[in-house]
Length: 179
Image 1 (cartoon, rainbow, N blue to C red):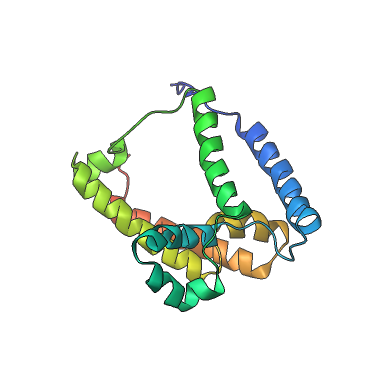
Image 2 (spheres, rainbow, N blue to C red):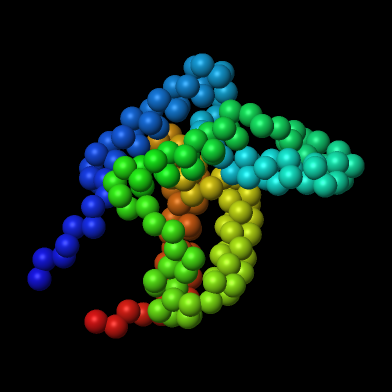
């Protein structure tokens, strides 16, 4: 039985475009911006939290050792993250795969239709992912794209750990598939 094509981007074209984007981003960050390291984005999420916190408790942000070292600012990386979100939205609209889901079908099948339960677990998962990204000195996409492009040993180790732990956790949460 042939599976119906769900649309979406051609994976070969998308992969080639990611490769071209990686080359351009490495060139832009090192030559145009004069940076010694390549593309990264995980610091932006922490800075984003700092921007929000600055509106509520500016004295806490000023006294926070991390925010003193990593200035709370909207910079090119911050705009890059917004661009990633916008680009993903545009891509999903152009290939007609965009849809709003409060509870993904796989989650609903295993844990029920509760939006609240899904939101709590998604939030907790996001915290764990961000802590892992900070401990690994970068997120999976940073290690996977920038690090692998540089043939960095730490990127190979980090990416292997991301995938390995992801497989274990997915197996634990969703269990084995029955055939």
